[in-house]
Every structure is written in structure tokens, then in C-alpha cells.
Image 1 (cartoon, rainbow over the protein chains, first blue to last red):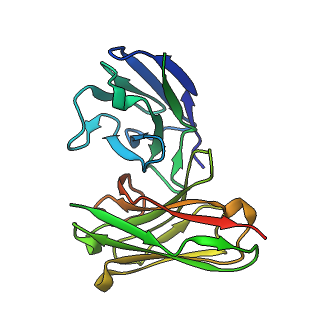
Image 2 (image 1 turned 90 degrees about the vertical axis):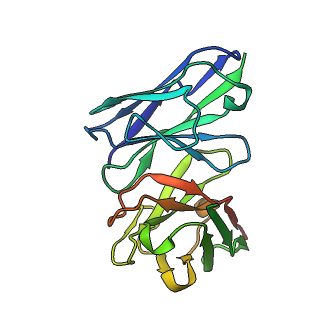
Length: 107
Length: 122
């Protein structure tokens, strides 16, 4: 099974800050990496697919990069609705696996 | 507008069975893989099972293989999860999830329902 490790597990930031979250796969997954945002009490929402492709309707302040085993999600200017938990997920092979999540909190 | 509506959750005793259903609308259901993903209270996301667009390919997490069965009825735009021999550790919110438009079950998760709560307790 492919293990996904996210860091940090939590962070504190202010509105307008640039935020970076990393995700590492236990083996190469090429660019089969997706990012989700989950607001408290809500269903997750797809933000980025294929490591760097912005899902339709997602604001351009979100961007993704990486390939192989190391990936990054960047929020260029944090907005109030971005205080949430973020998950990475590999779509290279089953079982499909998620990172443990990164909670972005208000500083 | 894509919509996924789950039903069938509830409180169930350990060892018993439960069947979750999900009705889809707003997209071509027969053209997409579908999945169940769960989230235990206060925990992260765990993929449970996926099924290809025809139903010919299914896959399961090790934690549920042999106890859970995923199925779909494309004529009814519906996805199902039959859960047998339930355990306390199966307690979670179960999300019905739309996969990509591919022929396998190895997909991203494009759209999520609001979830059906399942509590396994005596």
C-alpha cells in the first residue's frame, strides 16, 4: 500500500498569508496526486487534481506542484473560508489512500 | 448541478448488517466510477470501496474486504454498500463519492455527498 504523509499536521496563519502544505508518498506516484479542502462539518471538496491542475470553479489562489514522491499545495493569499483541513490523496493504485490531514487555523 | 444523496445510516448493533444507498443526479452516472469513503468521528478520511462504471471492477480497503460489498444500478442512478458483520470501528460518516470518468476504480474524487452516519454500538 502507498502511504501518504502530510506536514505539518496543523498550522496557524492570518488572512492574506501565503501557506504551503506538503505531502510525501512512500513510493513514486508520478503526478497522481489530488488535494481536498474540508470545512468543519462539511464534505470535502476537490481543489487540485493530477498534482497541478486546478479543478473547475476553484479560485486561482490555490496551486499545486510536484511529481514522484514529493508534492506541495500552496494558497497564495489565505481567505476566511480557507480555514479548514486539507488532505492529499493518491490515485496511482488501490487501495486509494489519503494523507493524515493539515488543519489550518486562525492565528 | 451534481447531487449525491446518501441514505440508510443509523445505529446498529455489532455483528449486524446495514445497507447504504446513494442516489445520483446532475451527471451521467453510468459513465463514472463511484466510491464510498468514510470518516470516523474526529479522524481523517479513509477510502472504503470503489466500483467501475460497468460494475465489472470492484476494490476494497483491507479493513472491510470480505464484510462489505459495493454495487451499483445504472438504470436507477444508484450506488450501494452492503455492510455485514459490523464492528465498533466501522462507526463513521460514510460519503458517497463520484470518481473520474475512467474505466478503472483508480480515480480522484470529483464530488462528495453529505454523508450517512453509521454508529455501531450495543
